[in-house]
Image 1 (cartoon, rainbow, N blue to C red):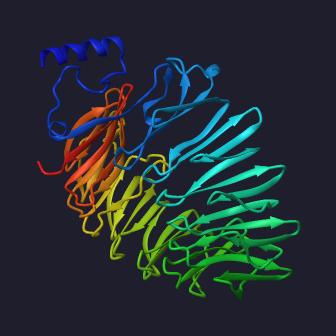
Image 2: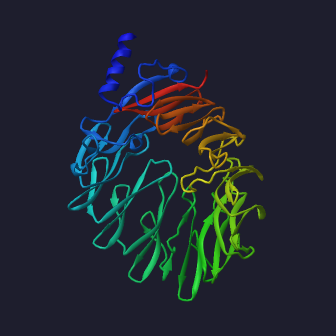
Image 3: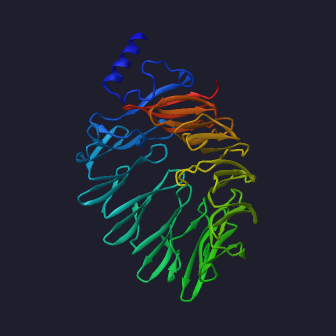
Length: 471
């Protein structure tokens, strides 16, 4: 063991990236001591990538990242794509570098003097003026929205689909098997589902197409002449001219949209108008489609409406979520005094106000019994801002940043990443924190809940740790 400690110490001196965030020469203890670990990748010699940009697949089955040449990432050296150790490039620009699902096919976007190219597996398309990858929720399928010669097209299931003057509002079912979008050609617009055109209108979608998670139900607003319609599963219903942004419940049985007349907005729920306001936002159905929440704003104040009743008055609502069983809810709100988390009507806070675009929404356990959230604590003008994860109102240890809150499938275990910018990332598992490396890039509980897999970057090594949840 002395020889191992000596080698590690010398390695750390020669390359300060190695074992950054851990005490050099220290034997693993606690969480890592009971883990099975393996190296699943490395950053190739001569290439440089910030550790937080390295992607790790489920169960550590793949690694992917974009990198530059040189120790400091010389901008003049070009960009390289690294997928499971295979290096391609250099490219002038580099977009998505990842894999589908469990690593079935590599997905790349890159740019040369000729334009932008994309590929899935060994199949390649391009050049285009621009390209954007859109993934299904399970990340098992990808659709590309590309533009060339002034026309927009989709690449879906390996096929380059029909060209249109404009494509907007792309919606993908959770499994990626259904893709819908609004399309404009000449002076006509329609909504296209899996390549099949729907009825043509003067305007269709208004940059908004709603598809239920299972891909079975579709809604959008369309107009022809002076007539405006809610189009729902192909059936047209006349609605006011200012109607916009329909949202369907997960099972497709309910629908919400809003109408606008000048500065006045009116939410319409299941064909019935609700009180007027200045703005409507953050429409959410419960997973079982039985409950509904939305935000109604008026005169600079926001009201969170749950089940048609005002639940919270505040300045703004940053996020809202129902529990998986639909029985509970949690919201992140803002008032002049700071930020609060509201759980089933009970408020927690105040907390310091972070960037609402970077904050994770509260998270319920799969059975809905527990709820967790990240909070930025601030004790006063001379105290530092520190992040904590709160689990059922109990604060965890403090960090510079808290991310990746996750429960095990059985709801018995809770884990997340705690980051200290000068020391690296710690895994916090059921309240026990241990520093594991430069960055933690993935946390996956086993379906049984008996172990948790952690993807860690240490210096130029990428590791996968399988840690039993039992102490």
